[in-house]
Image (cartoon, rainbow, N blue to C red; front, side, top):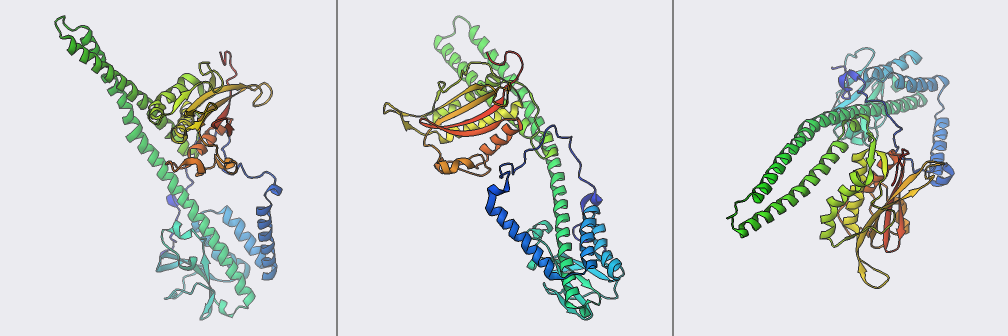
Length: 479
């Protein structure tokens, strides 16, 4: 029989390649959990009860000191020797060292097949039928199932009946007292947990390798070809310039009606070119930013900061990008909300990611802006944007800028507001608009990476989503 289980680690258990050293701490998904566990009394109580239950179970086992030592050493060495070969060897070696006991480990290879995976010496024969999914004696041997977790079958790629990965066979164990058989049942359970952990790590390495290959393919088949469109746009712009010159240099006897049609055509094509080129530039920016190779290598968004003019490089391009969609939905743009949109605000930021933050906020404005009754009784339907300088927003002498995107419509219920920036959450006021609930979660994550914060507040006539970012501390920050 082959001497390897079905969960062989790829590349001979080699460690997965590592990316560059992080330039800042990652943002963990559980940062919103209560810092003091007394603020999460329900979960704290549940965990305390589980700990007490495990303590009672351990006391009830009545294991000898040597049995307890074996389980402790198995756990320690299973962390130290992390290859599947060493784990399987430990499984059979420790009982032999402690008790002179021979055991054998069998693991499933498919739903209906299994094989001997590790033993100290090959037996003259192996079981011809699989043991039941509970501990039992067969002949002189004692068998105990090795069980995984609920998702172990997903990691293996096939269902596990009763969650059984395999079995251990304790040679001569049929004659053991129930206390020693119980010990081997627990030992089989510990083996199952370690197998699951290795399966998960192997699967993670497979996913990482796939993602790295996918990113390389994206760079080769998407990013690079996309750059060639710039050449096409330059040629088209040259053709439009030629058309304009031909119109200007048309012979004197050219019919005026024909010239008017050419001028109208040239103006229409120029406007269409400008709109398409804007979309191309923004799409290229987002593609190159969101599909940045380092994101995938490090498993997080990696910032590439530079000095950014907020209005010229971020807000104005996004306003123009979304203006037709806002117009189609009857949404006007109001610049009287606050701050001075024409002022210069400089940020040290990742241009592509901050632009995507605004794109997400403006996209939400398109979908969720609703008409409301103004003070004079007329209906209004608009979005607004602006910013305010906040002295000492990040501590003494550390100025911030609050960036607002306001929309008219029903306010979000108070009970839902704390979930707005959670992945997958959608408020009850979305009116069945299409969405995934990921946009605001992305906003919060990117803003946090920039050392800022994102938030929501009600305002007269509707809702205001805002972000607060550190203002660049150089000269002429605003003017």
